[in-house]
Amino acid sequence: MELDEAAEIDGANLLEVLFRVVVPLSTPAIATVAVFNIVAKWNQFFWPLVFIQWPERLPLAVGIRWFRTQHGYDPQLLMVTCIISMAPVVIFFLIAQRYFFRGAVLAGVRP
Image (cartoon, rainbow, N blue to C red; front, side, top):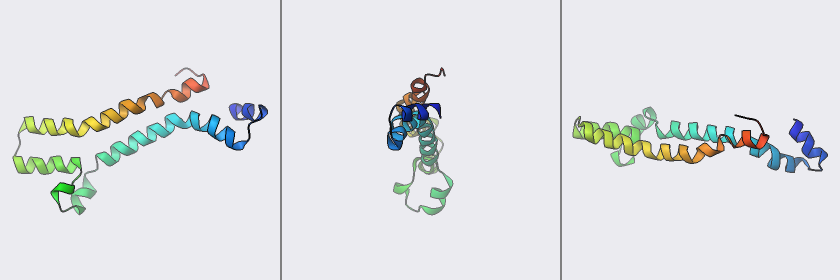
């Protein structure tokens, strides 16, 4: 609230306060929700397992299970498929990680 009031005293209107103060400070929360949402959607298992009939349209979590039933339990192949399925999520997290602490730096508060 103090930053909002300070921006208004400096002559900013309501939209300028929103886009120059509130949104930059909300970036860590938005990035966190985005990461959790993307990881949850990426790892969905039950609904695609129930509704999707074609193996080429399966998401990765169900595809790994289908791959295991088709090729048997080969630990090396299973590890490769698991690493390949985790790689995009890890890369997305590493890219989005810098936005987690951006709000604390902009507010001048130590994390």
